[in-house]
Image (tube, rainbow, N blue to C red):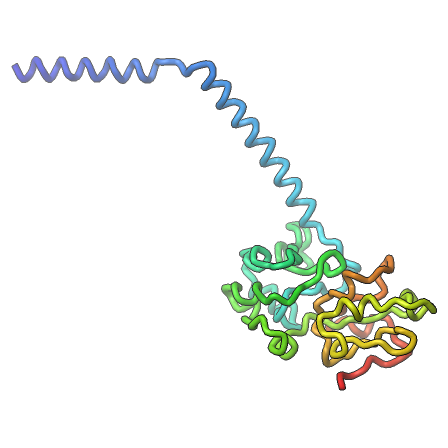
Length: 239
């Protein structure tokens, strides 16, 4: 009797499985599956194209060392070697100013972070320094006094041949935009900007808001300052 029941159960299971396997998908299910697959392909292609386009750097010069996130340091090679391209710095950035080099831009480290301060400057929120898992960026408190002491992303340099105030008109946008007015930059008669080398942290606010095209002020890294525009008046020191 048990053998008979076992055989009947086996036949029923085989028939049930065959029905489930051979049963065709509904037309609506097939159509929906096809449309979803097509949408994923199109969406993925559009996303990759956008990422590829946004990854292309728009730096002022390909030979100048790029501005890096706060506390990256003067040794760009050390920073690139320590960075694991996790993208956390850009994820937490308050102003969305951190960009990444493309895969086809290995000179400064493919996929490594940098700032295009003309497009969007650093607000000194210091969030990027607090999430870096490798020490490529050193943690800094978001206190202005601490930032002034610990951060040197570069130095603002005025191109007097382009600056509106040096050309005889009054501007002063760079001074007004600076988060450290009087400490990083001050105005001398007639509203001519004078960068204070000991106070400038290189955040790029002055660069972003400069009304000139191309900009009359830019952030230069320490190793490139010899090639920067020369000022007729020496850059000042913070009093």
